[in-house]
Length: 181
Image 1 (cartoon, rainbow, N blue to C red):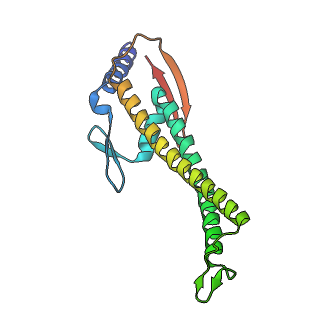
Image 2: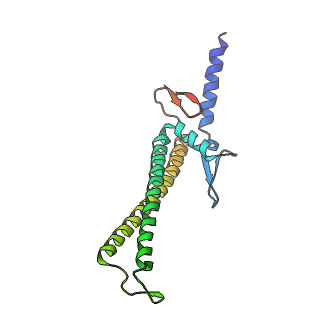
Image 3: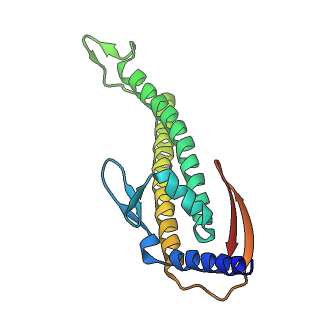
């Protein structure tokens, strides 16, 4: 009966020593069709890597930032698509409307002043929204790469003499009870 606490301590010590193994770092192989993620020699999907990064305290904030930037990128992308199509519609109507067509080609009076200002403003707004969409997506990817670097840096650093703590994390498909030495 006295051996069980010692086995428990040995088991916990072995898993914590195994956690600082450099083979447990996340390695990314970049490719055009999609990146591959490895922990040690085993390949993992991006969703598994995201779950691993969310479970780590160091990379958790960067992952949240990445998620919110990606959501913002999707929203600005939808708005940018709508505004860009509106600007293209305005330009198309000005160049090819029935009023400007004369004897087989369009006349040289392309825009009226009011419509010209509206078209310029809508086109400028479309460019700004599309650029902000691209920025949010690239910033989201940058935050994801930074979270992998922070995770790897935390794994490789030696264990500190901090106080132990017990944490409970709720995930999509799991409940994790974490004890940190």
